[in-house]
Amino acid sequence: MKFTPKVRKAIYAAVAGIVPLLILGGLITDEQSQAIMSSFAAFLTLGATVLAGANVPAEDVTEIEDFTEIETPEIPGE
Image (tube, rainbow, N blue to C red; front, top):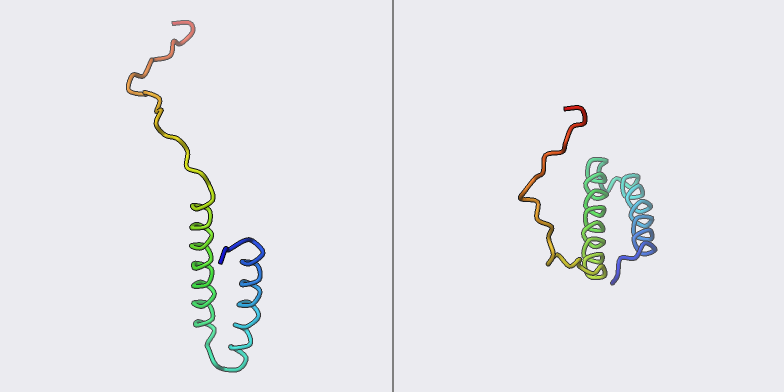
């Protein structure tokens, strides 16, 4: 399953709709609901990170500029 923006939005909407009903029904407390929402947010963030890693090409880092020698800039007027 790919966590596209549309899928993530649907999951957030479902969780945001179900959790308050569970609180009203007395099945979970407010503190538990906060933990549930945070867990889902972390899970979806992880999914988005994995999705980005799989679909974004890595940059070529074979050429790295040499910064070992630093030139001191000239100050005008000295």
